[in-house]
Image (cartoon, rainbow, N blue to C red; front, side, top):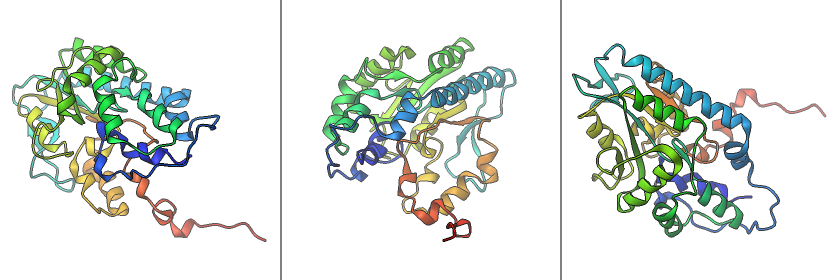
Length: 289
């Protein structure tokens, strides 16, 4: 079924691409579909995904508890003038420690709207998503191992902060959703940062730096590269350059060493990839006649 690419940007609620960029043409009806789309089956229902997510959460908790034993000089938030080729970071000083996470498909799985869109075979609907942000408490689930991870970080004295592209206008609904998922209290403007908190739209860079001005951020977690730097989301950035940026020496020094990426095969900027982006021409193969 073709409703999924809708969901692909759906979660700018907590991810990288704005709802305005999402195609809104309804997909073919899928009420007769016996099963969810493959990507949803994998992420939300498979033990393979559960094991991978739980393992990522365990690495995060272990890293955070170990990292604070030796006060780092710098945060893992890139400074305003930094590039991946020449990375520099917001200084820590004597600031308290924090771990900053995206929300959607990083702290919680948005099971309610994902099923709704998939079953209806409809494209992303801004009005529906707005309702979800306001009333979704109890219909999202903490991802495997997330409650344990968050509790371990907090017990170690690390403040857990969510930086998500959910709307600031729906702050209470997001606070309620995170709490109902078992993740404890998040307070808008203190431990919950939302799109609309500043004038930079869906870019999280400004919010990250605002957090880093008050905290020594030792962990960034997300399911999209934009959860780490807007450099990965520059408009019209060619796929090959995006790959090079994400696998550069600067970025590679941070993956699993302060930056932690969660699996998400459901949506993301990679949906725009063509055959040549995913399959190098020199690897093309055809069976003999």
